Amino acid sequence: MTKADLREQAAQIFQEARTRYSQETTQAEATWQFARACFDWAEFATNNMQRAEIAGLGIAAGRQAAARDPKLAAGHYYLAMNLGQLAQTKN
Image (cartoon, rainbow, N blue to C red; front, side, top):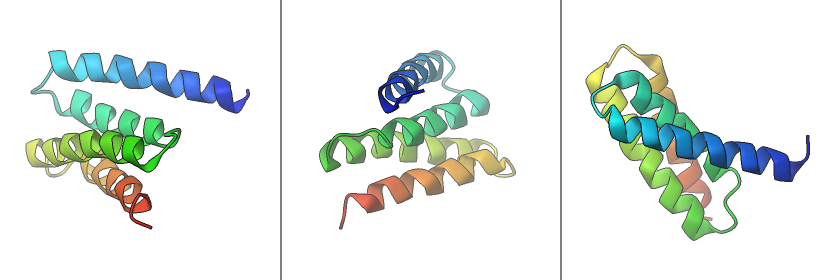
């Protein structure tokens, strides 16, 4: 699988997760999965502005997931991973 294939796959997963998240705004699983998709999609950002924008979406979703279900590790994990994506834009 080429990098272009992986980028396309990440974009598709991001869009699907975003749609599900917007339809199931109270579901912790949809929320953390959107945060995960943000992290993965941010890996393919072409510039810091795009990476920061995507990471911001993931941070918000990660915070929501962690607040909804504090015992759910995935919310905390993807919150941290998206904070790392944002940190990459600061160097």
